[in-house]
Image (cartoon, rainbow over all chains, first blue to last red; front, side, top):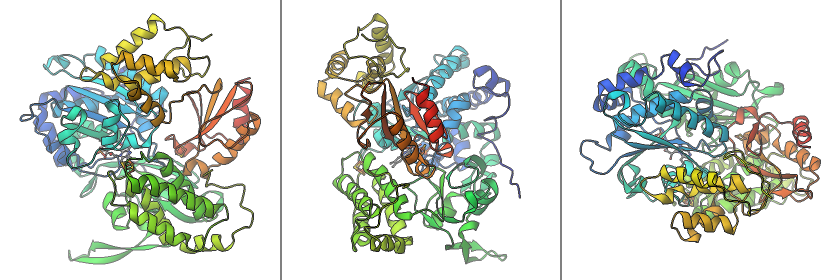
Length: 455
Length: 178
Ligand SMILES: Cc1cc2nc3c(=O)[nH]c(=O)nc-3n(C[C@H](O)[C@H](O)[C@H](O)COP(=O)(O)O)c2cc1C
Ligand code: SF4
Ligand code: FES
C-alpha cells in the first residue's frame, strides 16, 4: 500500500525545477508570509504559535509557544536574541540539511517572522561546519534577502530592523545542546551551562534572554502564520500537531527523508510501506526511533498504552511495535522518544554488541568533559563494549555496563548524560542474552566486517 | 610557499608561514563586525579562516588571532584543542573524513575506510588524529555522523561531500586526486 506524504516543510524540496534562489522562492509565494506577519504584529504571531501547539523539532519536543512565552518583549529591557540551531548532529538525523541546501529561504522567512514576533534585532544561525556548502548557500540567501529588503534596516518599511549572521561550529556534537551552543557562539569551549540559573530565556547569549529553536521548528512558524494556529493544530494529533520530518537510515530498502502529519504513520508503515521493508530480504531486529540517543525498540515487543474506547473511557491497550504511531506521545509511552526524527533500522543479522559499541564510541568521543560521571563513565562504557566486541568480555560486563550507565543519567550538567546512558540501558536491558553469548564465545576470532569501529 | 585560497575552500597545503594578505585582513575584519556585542565571538570564524588559508592552526595563528581580538593566547588555543575540526599540524593535500557512526557503519563505512587506507598506502588505525601518506598527498581519518545517514556511507574529501561511497567509489575518489 502506498502511503502519500503530506509535504508542508518539504513541499518544494526535490520538486522538479525548484531552485534555492530567492526568485524561485518568491515565485512560489515566498516572503508573502513575512508581509502578512509584519501586518499582524508580534503579539498576534506569538498567539498563533501558542494555538498551533507546535512542539520543538530539535529533540526535546518542548512547546514552542511556551518557550517563547518565557520572554515578554514588552517588559524585557535587555536585548533579546534568537539562535537557529542548525547544528544537526544527532546521529541518524538529516532533515535540516535538506532545508538548508534546497530551500534556505523558507528557513530565513520563518526565522525573520520568529525574530519579529519576539522583538529580536540580532539573530544567529549556528550551522555545523561540515555543511560547508550549506554555509555558503545560507550566506548567499541572507544577502539576497537583505538586497530585497527583507532583512536589515526598516524591513519592508515596517520600522523593524533585524540582522541575521551565520556562525559556523567546529565539529563538536555538544554544540547542538543549546547552552553549549551559546557558549560556543560566545567564543568559548562548548561547555553546557548549568540550569538553573542559566536558562536561555533568562541568561542566554551574552547573559541576555535568548530563544534557541531548531531549523524545522522555525520553518513551521512560517506555515503557522500562513494557515493560522487553529488550522495548523488540526494537522496531526492533539498535543502532537503539525507534520514531522522523519529520516530513515540503516537496513531498509529505501532510506531517506519523509514528511507526514505527526502520528499519521505507524513505525511499521514507515519501515515496510514507505521505506520498502528490510533490505536483502531480511527481518527487522531493532529500531532506534528518534536519533541515536533514543532508547532502542526490539522487534516483537508490545507496549501498554492508554487509549479511549468507544464510550470515551480510558483503557489500557497493547500496541505492537509495528503499530506505534510516529508521534511524540506514543514513542514516549513506548519508553523511547521521537527525539530528532532519526529512525535507525537494524536487521536480524546485526550484532547488538557491535551496534551498541559503535554508539558508545560516539558519545565517548563527544563528551565535553565537564562532569566526571559523563567524561569518565562514557569512556568506560566505550572501553567495556569494545572489549566485549573484540572477544575479551568478562562475565560481569553486562552488569557493569548497566551500573555505569545508571550512574551517569541524572547526575550531569546537561542531557548528554542521559543521551549516552539510554542506549546502553536499553540495549543491555533488551538484548542481554546477546551480550552473554558474545562473552561466552570469547576468544573466537572477531569478525573483520564489524560495525563497532571503536578502535 | 603557500597557495592563496578562497575562504571555505578547505585545503591542506602549505606551511603556516604564508603571507597575510590585505584580503585576509579585511575578511577577518568583516567577520569580527558580525559580533557587535563581543569580539570574542569571532574566535571560531577566525580559526576557520586561518585553517582554510594555511591548512592548520599553529602558534602563529593562535598568536595572531589572540592579538586581533585582544584575548589571551590560551583563550584561542583551548578552542583549537577542544573542537575536532581544528588541527595543529598540516594534513595531506587531500584530506578524507569517513563517517564512522552507526548508520554509516551499517552501510559499510568500515570497508570504505579500509579500502581508502589501502589505496593511500597508510598504516596505523587513525581514529584519533589523521594518518598521512608519505608523499603528503593523502590523509585519512574517521569523523562522526555527517548528517547524511540516508546515503551511507558518506565521505568528505577536503570540503567536498560524497554519498554512498562503497569500495569502488572510494577508488574513484582517490584516483581523481592523482
Ligand atoms: C547532547 C544534545 C545535542 C543536541 N543536538 C541538537 C541538534 O543538533 N540540533 C537541534 O536542533 N537540537 C539539538 N539539541 C536540542 C537543543 O538543546 C534544543 O533543545 C533545541 O535546539 C531547541 O529547539 P526546539 O525547541 O526548536 O526543538 C541537543 C540537545 C542535547 C542535549
Ligand atoms: S553531561 Fe557530558 S556533555 Fe553534558 S556538560 Fe556534562 S560532561 Fe559535558
Ligand atoms: S551516520 Fe554517517 S552521516 Fe550520519
